[in-house]
Length: 116
Image (cartoon, rainbow, N blue to C red):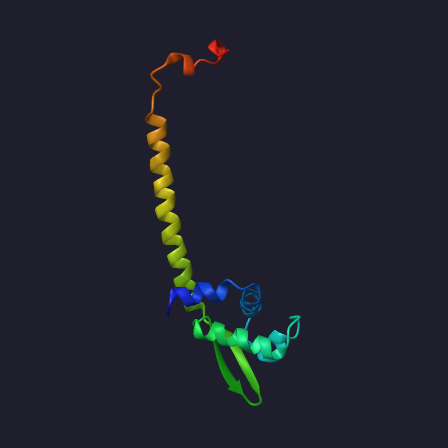
């Protein structure tokens, strides 16, 4: 699975809305299309993008196309985001530590009562 495809798929608000609806359980393509202000053809295109990214799976049940969320893809994306967050948090913590160790050499800059 490509993280580029996952994040590109999640960049679209309609696709995020579809993912949100699937968090409560599998739905038919028709059920997913129902509340959206776009055509069923457009919904189908969005589903194709989500499927290519590995975020959903589609199967056929009788005459319906059932769409299911692939939590593994979201877990992998979450892991990547958490790792990036942890790295940046460590950098900010290091910067805070360095700034706290800085001691001004000019006493006039630290005493607000001497400022004009």
